Image (cartoon, rainbow, N blue to C red; front, side):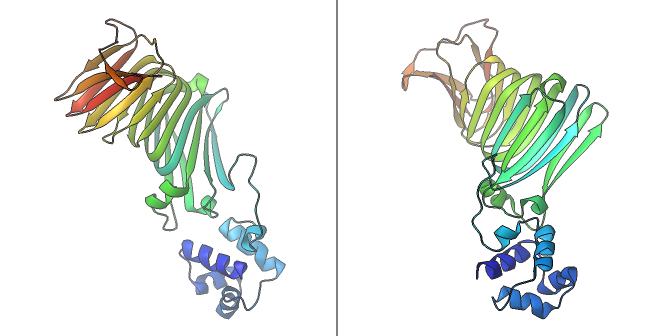
Length: 290
């Protein structure tokens, strides 16, 4: 019965009728109906064709238990593109459950999509990379009727950029959690909707445009964090003893301070090289230590 249910589910997810599937397989619609009602099962040739068509293994089609890959996810898709000089990156990812964005010692931009719950991931998402002079444009597009809400529930995105070739980065994503690791560049502009951000070994200016209340964990502050918010209340956590200057801009913005979950007097340092800035309208930021 599991095969019948699996076939019916992935066919509908792909927006395909029984007639269309039958046409692609070179069989009758009655044969597809028989398979989906558990009155029969395809021969090995048709099983392979279905497997290739929907990018799903035969074991998964038959309902056999699948073990996770070494990457830690059941399903994944990897797209790579060679980079040979510093570039500006404009990356639009849409919705996701999680984004991990990092620099690494390599020569390719790598976009890995991963999920435990989306078996047709490879056919449901299309990664488009355009190389335009000194700029790389990356878009992740949903297909087959997959909604942004579904992506936020089941899709994790891992983006790696070659450290020697990182210029300015503009990144747009709506994700439950966002992590930036091992990045050193002039500036990173985040146009995001998220409640959780983690910055680890990030050097340069990080500009965050987000109107949700955020919890930002910054394991080390090496440069500037500029937050642009409207009617939001956020927190940023930095290591105790970090030297920084705090400043506010805009209308009705304010910064307060906490240590050990208790309000304290400001502990920023005038003229420090590192900066935490809150800009926008009627927004609050709490700076606390860990």
